[in-house]
Length: 206
Image 1 (cartoon, rainbow, N blue to C red):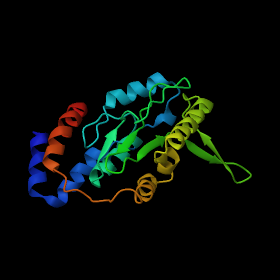
Image 2 (cartoon, rainbow, N blue to C red):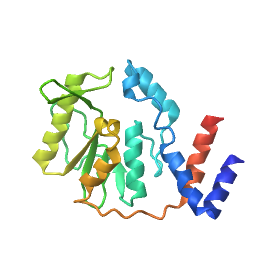
Image 3 (cartoon, rainbow, N blue to C red):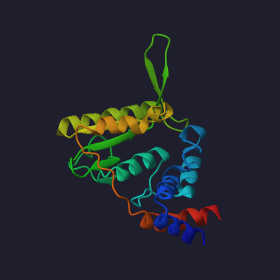
Image 4 (cartoon, one colour):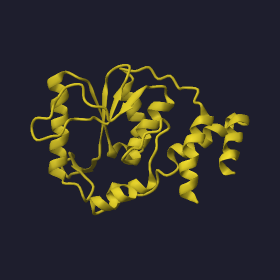
C-alpha cells in the first residue's frame, strides 16, 4: 500500500517527487558511521543489514559512497561502481585494483578515502581513521593508489570523510569533477526508482 501511494505521488505531484527520491537517497545518512564502531565485523554486519542501495541499484559499502553515487546519478554523470582498473596492478602484495568509481565519459577515477583530520598545534593536520582500521596501513594504501594512477597516467579524483564532516562533501565533489565532466541533471525516472528502492526500504521499516 505504501509503495502504491509513493508511486501515485510521483506521477501526480512533481514538487513531492523530488522529496520522495531525496528520502530514498539520503534519509539514513544520519545513522552511525565507521567511527562509531570498534570492530570491523560489527561495522560490516551493520552495513550489510542496511543494504545501502544507490539510485542506480548498486549495493555500496558506506553512507559516503551512497552520497557520491546518488549525486553522480542525479547530475547525469555516468559511472561504474568498483570497476576493474584498466591496467593490471596486482604487484606489491595488493589484490587486483578496483577503484571506487570510474566516470564513463571521461575515464576519470574517483576514490573516496575514509579519513578524518584533526588540527595540530603547529597548524598542520593529522589524518585519522575509524577505530577498527589500521591507520598506517590505510594511509599506505592511499599512497599506493596515488602512485598507481601517476605511473599509468590515469586521472584520479579524491574525496574524503572529513569533507562530509565539514558539510561539503558533495560541493567538493562537484568542484573536482567540473574540469572533466559536464553536469546535466537528469529527468529521473522517478517511478522506476521508487519501485526499485521502496520494496527494500519498506520491508526493512516493517
